[in-house]
Length: 371
Ligand code: AOF
Ligand code: ZN
Image (cartoon, protein in one colour):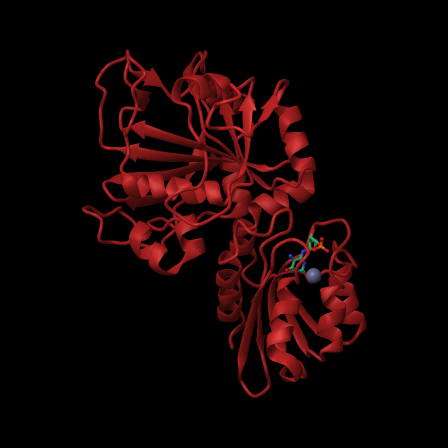
């Protein structure tokens, strides 16, 4: 197999377990035996085997003399499972192709060193940019101790979230809602303001797609019979919240309203990824509710500037992802015309969420990148 193609397959295998591995990364491994047979493995839930161990178990003795492609550097530490670098060496794998180094301080190059010391041929950096994008939440967590922050917004094309009377159901349609539920399933925690809990009484569980419910966090207090319960009620600075969530092993947190909470996260520069679900709806006046509560940039020189990282038609709506220009550059841009989350689940979901059967098309074709 060609390195890039095999690594792309490893990335797809990893995408299949997204949302099930926290606080561990979602890693994929492809092994090709000397006789050409191909075996794959993905990280199992915490305490279970890592991707390499799953692929090695599938290949058995066929691993002798094989090549392995793995998205993240094989681990060198004995944690809940034995070191994957040792397992690859013992199985007699001849060549290991690695996407990116593991920043986890227990690994951080030691897995690569161990493989090389044992005489295994090692290559690093194949499809590195795609893997940095795929594992952005994990990488941020291991480097900063804080989770990746996704701010989700459902808005009209004129940038409003609710009518003057507060009514907001439903601005976007079913496909956008299902996509948002997948974002939830991929998040380990959801943050919501106490006011939103009082007014909307959201349950914030995962529906429409399969996935486990994230930890629910209320900024302030929630009534004991609120549907969001059981929830963590937090008082204090948002930076402190992110530190605490990071310590609990939360790799991705999703912020889901309302305007005050959105404004606080945004203006403190704490959002890594903005996900706008935009409907062709117009409230048509300045009295409809804005996305962000509070005072914004006082003049054009101080506006926040970012980059579009993907644009995806979802039913009659659009999903538009925006990141700070520096972060978009650091993690690489995402394909336009295809949802990162849809791409990461693949199969039937892709037809449903990223298909060209939408009633209109974006300017770019699937797979093209904008920058
Ligand atoms: C790999 N392959 O598939 C994963 C790796 O708690 P443990 O023992 O499961 O170890 C978790 C750490 O192992 C995690 O922080 C990361 O450094 C590495 N994850 N490594 O070789 C995998 N998921
Ligand atoms: Zn491992």
